[in-house]
Length: 64
Image 1 (cartoon, helix red, strand yellow):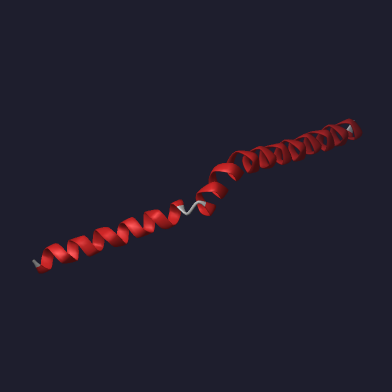
Image 2 (spheres, helix red, strand yellow):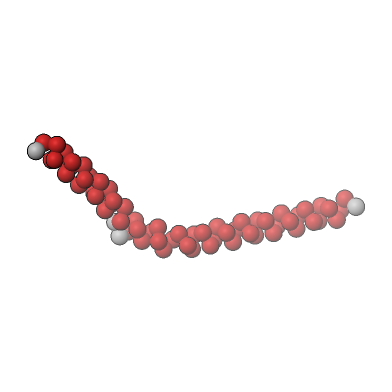
């Protein structure tokens, strides 16, 4: 009786490992294009620059 339980547990573990691999692959596929493109196109740099520009504008208004 213990043997079928071990086989069932092993099969379940194998299926979970396959599922985890599938999820990793799909996540990489989904995030690869968008995240990689944002970095290479400089979208994150634009956000930082925008924040710096706002800080400069606020500093300038305080001086005036």
